[in-house]
Amino acid sequence: MKKIVFIGAGSMAEALMQGWIKQKVFTPQEIYVTNRSDKERLQFLHETYGVQCLFDQAIYQQADLIILAMKPKDAVAAMRDLKPKMTTHSAVLSILAGIAIETITKFLGSRPIARVMPNTSATIGMSASGIAFNNEVSAAQRILFLQLLEAVGSVIEVDEDQLHAVTALSGSGPAYIYYLMEAFERVGTKVGLSKDTVRLLMTQTLAGTAEMLKQSVDEPDVLRKKVTSPGGTTEAGIQALEQYQFNEAIEACIKEAEARSRSLANG
Ligand SMILES: NC(=O)C1=CN([C@@H]2O[C@H](COP(=O)(O)OP(=O)(O)OC[C@H]3O[C@@H](n4cnc5c(N)ncnc54)[C@H](O)[C@@H]3O)[C@@H](O)[C@H]2O)C=CC1
Ligand SMILES: O=C(O)[C@@H]1CCC=N1
View 1 (cartoon, helix red, strand yellow):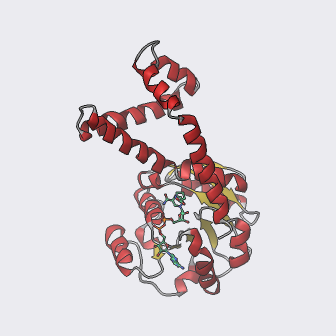
View 2 (cartoon, protein in one colour):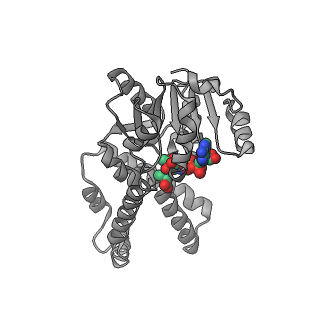
View 3 (cartoon, protein in one colour):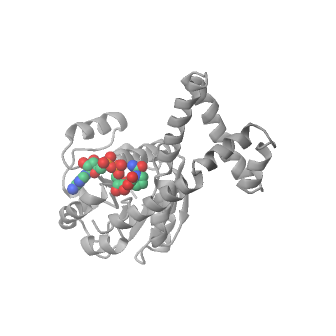
């Protein structure tokens, strides 16, 4: 794949292009980016990453891969605008939350389409992505798509319908963890530590815990019990979480996000 065009120049497009350039999957010269109207944003991406932002319409005809990276609510207008500019050979990679392959096919015609749900940690090669393909994707193209996502983290193939759940968990997931960190920092300072100290302690705790889960054969509840001394501090903390309905809050969080992903499909 030698010419790729991002339609949409927001935070997720930036995360992917940054990751791909860093991992040398594409050179900045091979990446073209456009948006609706924010020329300053395009100028920023050009100056920061060297990607192509002012380009001839003929590029659409030559594109090997077109990436749909606008907000779901803008997708129909963007696809209507895009269709007359495209040739049949371009494959499409969509990162749109909620929008079905069937809808993309309706607007862009039958062609190889991969629907991906990455997350912003693609910036540092640590995305956790879910992917689903349509039947037009050949075996060789499937491998190429998987390699693209592997270059910016890990990727797992799922049924298209499961992408709603992937979106609710790992697509939105970084925001939940940042929100958690905001709370740790706020409360950490109330119990006598500086914000910087809390950041250091808790980023390492998150990284260590994730690594333990990856390396250990034990289930999370077993690992949790190893931390929890009878009558100790962890027990007191977890009791407070239960009192404030931690499990109910997480269940509501994921279910609401999953339902929103489904509703985005309807505009
Ligand atoms: N931000 C995230 O963490 C993730 C976002 N996504 C998905 O990625 C997509 C983009 O999200 P963000 O980057 O956060 O959005 P954003 O709001 O930061 O960027 C959207 C971009 O699309 C452009 N755009 C809108 N209409 C357009 C049109 N008709 N033609 C060309 N460009 C147009 C805007 O100018 C802007 O550059 C969404 O569909 C979202 O569901 C997926 C995974 C994670
Ligand atoms: O909030 C959203 O809708 C997008 C999809 C996953 C992360 N951000």
